[in-house]
Length: 317
Image (cartoon, rainbow, N blue to C red; front, top):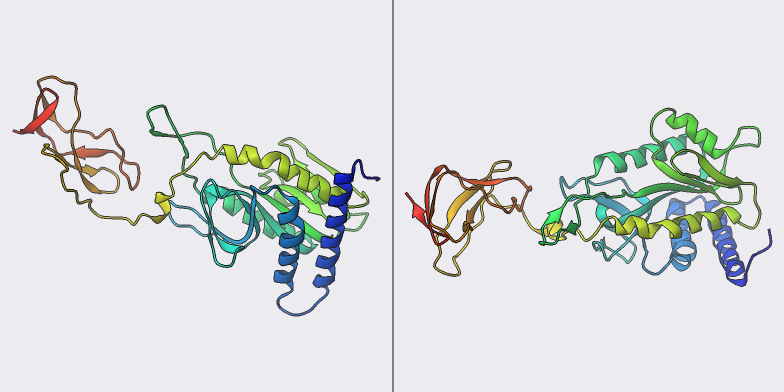
């Protein structure tokens, strides 16, 4: 198929160069072949051909709630403005799940077993990782909101499918059956590209000049911003602030406070109650408007009799 414009023609030529080098590398027999292929695809295909606001790396993905780590992910497309990864050498690192937009499993030759393994890896990422909310209301309070999870896709240099065995989409459908398709797209260089639109696998097959990779890259660039915008800006502190059994505070001014304890994780802290400017007595427990900084649970005082004058706590009777 002839190029529609000069821009597309230049992209095609870069794709052809990267794929040829990756395929030649795949013929080697030493243990570093997979790493060399990833280096080629990251350095010559994805990094130069994707927008600059997409980071491209390799490594493991982590979530803040339980510290769950993924297996090694071949290629991670991420947005550093959401949360920064910890990188060891510019590409290899650990990536907070909230910043991950796409994960790409890379295969030299795609087989049924490789496809099944990629499906299981995508399922683990989709079902075992929690995302922090990253949006706030008009009062600056964190709110729950819809979050689009990281999209898992697979990219292969070759496939063991012959012309009589159907398409990669059909083969993948046989793997997940009536359950969920956790892989969102399948691309085999020089052969075919498929993406799941929620109802159908839509794709191309047997095109020339790497149409399928152009479509694959176009699919990523057309969707990554909507994935990123659903994340907001989660708190980095959830990853780096240590857990404390109690919080020690020093009053910055002469105010009365009460001890409160989280009902979920038993974290202890101090509360300066805020009530309307009136003289009132509260019989019972005081509940903090702020949630527990560790787990988001309710912070509650011991039951008692609390006296307020002009909205300020006088003490506990």
